Length: 226
Length: 226
Image (cartoon, rainbow over all chains, first blue to last red; front, side, top):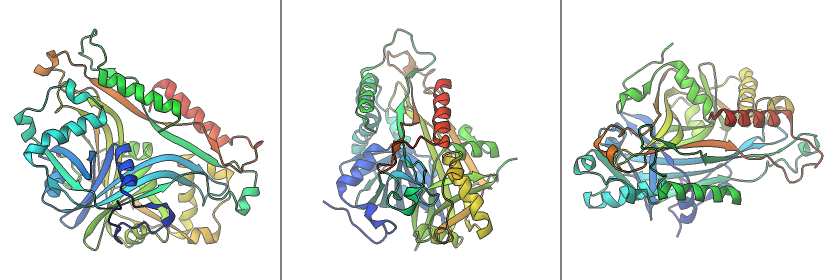
C-alpha cells in the first residue's frame, strides 16, 4: 500500500533516493527516536523535537499540556514531521562528492488530540517502544498525570522517505585514478551501560526490560546491524 | 556574550533547562551533525535536514542549487533551525516521569547566500568539521561544481538551548519507595570501522584524517565522553 505521493512530498533532488511504500516509512519511523515537528505560529515557522511512536498508520507525539507547540498542533495547524538518521559519512576523492548516508522521512498532515479512552494504549506504546516491557514494571499514570499530558495523533498518509546508502559515487569518475582513499565511515547509536539512580537501593537488580533491551542491542552489534 | 532572548525562543516549559549563553549554543551546534531547518512555502510549514557547520557566530548549510528548500531559504524566508541530540533514556518509577536526556538548540533568523569569495572557506569548514584534515587530502571544487552548490549562512542571534541531564526526577517522590529500578540508559553515537570504496586499490592506506578521527573517537570512549 503506497502513501499519497503529492508534489509537496515527492523527492525531487536525486529522485532515485525517494521511496513511497508504507513499509519504507514505517521502517524509518520505527528506527528513530526523535521526530522534528514544524508548524507555523504568527506567520513564522518553528520546529520542535518530540519523542514519537508509530502504531499502525498513526504517529503519536506527546508532552505537557503546557507546551506551546502541542497547543498549536492540537488545534489542527498544518504540520510537517521530519525524522532523520545519519548512518555514515561518505568520503569521496573530491570535496564535491563528499556526502552522508542517511534515512529521512517527511510526513505532512494535521494532528488531532487522542481521545481519552485511547490514551492508555498510546502511552503504553510510547513506553514499550523505547524500552519493551517497561510499561508492566512501573506505576501507571494517575488521573492527574493524564490530565497534564497532551497526546496527539497524525495519520500517516502524505509522506515520503529519502535514503542514501553505499559508497561514494565517484568510483567511476576521473578522480578515481587519484591515490585518494575513499569510502564510508559508518555511524551507529549505541546504548552505554545503565546508570542506576543515585538513591536507588543497591540490591535492586536491573529489570527484565532493561536486560532484554541490552541483550537485543548486543545481538544487533554482533550482526553488524544498526 | 548572551544571545537575543526573545519570547519566541525563551524556554517556557521547564525553564530551568533553558540556556542562553553563546557558549551553550556553540557546544550543541558543534556536537551535532544534522540541523533540521523549518520554513514556510505556500502557507505550509516544512522541515528538512541539512548537515551544518558553525564558524564563529555564523551557521552554514549547503546543498544543490536545485534544492527547493535552499531556493526558498536563500530568498530570505524566515527560518527556524533546530538541532537535537538524545543523550539517554530516563527510566523512572512511574510512566509519567519517564523522560529523555537531550540537548536541543533552536535558532531563528533568515539565511543569506554566501558571497562567492567566502565559499571556499565555508566548504573547507564543512569538510574539516566532519573529518578534520580531509580538505587537504581531496580535490577542491571546480568552478562548475561551485556553481552547482548553494551555500547559505545564518547569523546566530535569536536562539536558545534546552538541556536535560541526570537521573529521573522522582527520586524523592512517594514512588521512590517502590522496588522499581530507575536510572538512565545513556546513548552515544559511535564510528564503526571504515568501509573502503569497493573499487579502491587495496594497498591504499587509511588517510591521516580518518586515522586521527578514529583515534580521537577512541580516546573519547576511554574518557567516557560523548
